[in-house]
Amino acid sequence: MTQYHVEFDELMQCKEKYLKLGNATEKDIRDIWIKPGEDNDISNLVYNYTIPLYQKMIFRYRNANNKIIGVWNGIDPGNRRTLLSNFNIHSDDDRIPEFFAWICFSLAIYDINIIDPSLVDLWKKDDMHFFYFLGESRQKALIKRYNERQTYLENLN
Image 1 (spheres, rainbow, N blue to C red):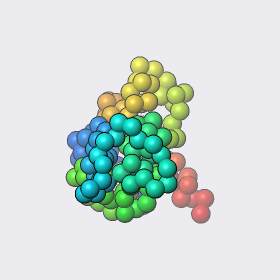
Image 2: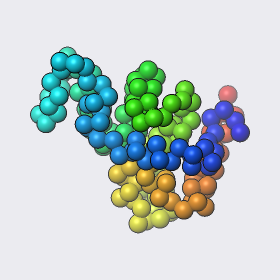
Image 3: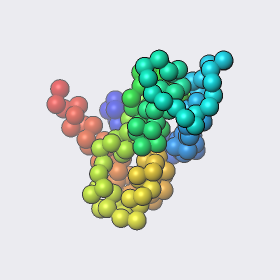
Image 4: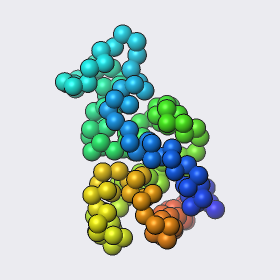
C-alpha cells in the first residue's frame, strides 16, 4: 500500500462514523463552531465578511450542495480535525476523507450510471452513504479505481 491508498477493511472499520458524518446538518455545523454569546439562529443568515465562523461554515456547506465532505475539502487542517473529531473520527490521516472527496468531486453522473443508474440520486445527496450502500464487489472496484488513480499521480513525480 502506498501512502495515499485506501483499503477496503479500513473503510469498513469506520463505516458507522462516516455514515454519521454524512448525515451532518446545518445545526450540527453550528454546534461545532459556535462560540458562547453568538446568536444561534440559522434561519435567516446573510453573508458578509464579518459573520462568525460557524455561519461561514454553514455557507460552505450550502455551497457544497449540503455535502459535509465539501466543507471538509475546503477548510484548513485545524478545522478539518475539529469537524472530524466531533463525529469521533480521530486521525491525522486524511486518506479516507480524501477518498470520499474523490467520490464527491471526481466522479460524474456518467460514472454513477455505469455503476448503477438507480443510485444517481443517492450519490448526489451523499457520497458516503452512496459508497456504503454499494455491494462489496462494487465497493472494491471503486477503491481499486481510486488507488490506481493515486498510483498514477504518485508516478508523475
